[in-house]
Image 1 (cartoon, one colour):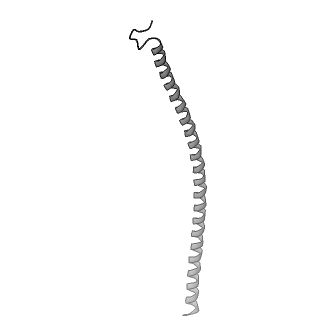
Image 2 (cartoon, one colour; image 1 turned 180 degrees about the horizontal axis):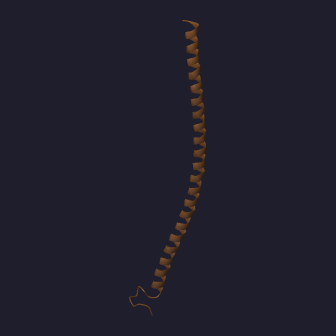
Image 3 (tube, rainbow, N blue to C red; image 1 turned 90 degrees about the vertical axis):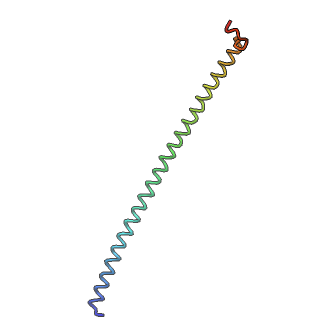
Length: 89
């Protein structure tokens, strides 16, 4: 092998190393951006989860209110003679 062919091989290897270093840099950057995006999405999902928990609590309270109103109406109907078959007095 001549010095010229060795120089060509070294140049080709240097070009490959430069190309691999650029690729590695782009991969590291892409991974860092993806990590930040995941953290942002985690925060957003946590906020949505908190809002859903609050809505769930409100819905439970609403259904308790409706059930209480129905029970109260039935009790009032019974106390007004609803079971006696006579109707209100």
